[in-house]
Length: 367
Image 1: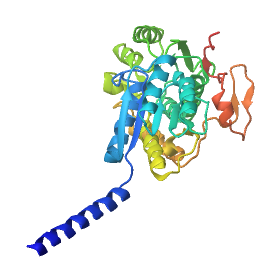
Image 2: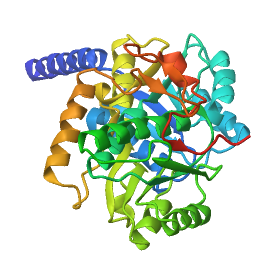
Image 3: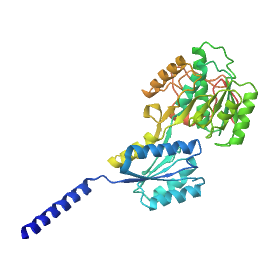
């Protein structure tokens, strides 16, 4: 009897010892919080971030605990949400829109042991980095596709007159020129891409009105740039093909869409959490593209010929290998001035501050 009791005690001690060792060796479950601009079903910007969150959860599984807060719109909302996650001991907090920048910086200073990541901003701290993607690479490919198919009178529903949008318009137009030249299509060099301004990131009613107006004036392709697919949907309803933006416009009813340029945040979120697991995270200003798998193209529309698909995918492979040819000279602006000489490339600071249009863009920056 005593031997049985002794044996049971020894086994119990062994079990406790093994459990202690296992617990000590188990990796810490990291907690990530996300402040989202709008609702996860907004069909654009926030939906793309939500898909990134879902990708993160799928890839890292039980090693992470992920939460998010929708409709974090104003700076006051942002500070409340970000500070709330910090006070609860979250290891990293992501702010997913520009207006989150200053509130996040303030909270980061109060919680120096936690990490913070801000999307689309430029301010950093020892524990706060920034991240964005080179969506202009995808826009160049979308323009290239349109040019290969002979579209030469594009109408673009632009959003806000800031460098990000200017850069995208220029990249699309440069790709459009390349495609037209490769397809030997004649075009009017001054009026390839006509711009109308929404002056908002999302405004479904005005997006529809502007797209209908462009279609009514004979533009042969409508390019969506807003966070919602309404201009692409309106284009289809008026018998004009479209190029989508942010999310796959075809999945929201714009079945005439030739291709959509898409954000792909998931791989970046996984990388940040892996660095936190490994203890290798450091403040950075990340700006990645196809090479980093943070930009992508949607499936091609059924109207896109096979040879065009192959050419676009071949050029996409060059981006994936790290070759970025978009803003390589010679590049001429609307006034006929060479802004990027032959053999030179625009630097990142030059692209991030871009406030001029290339020759071929028909429109001006609003005052």
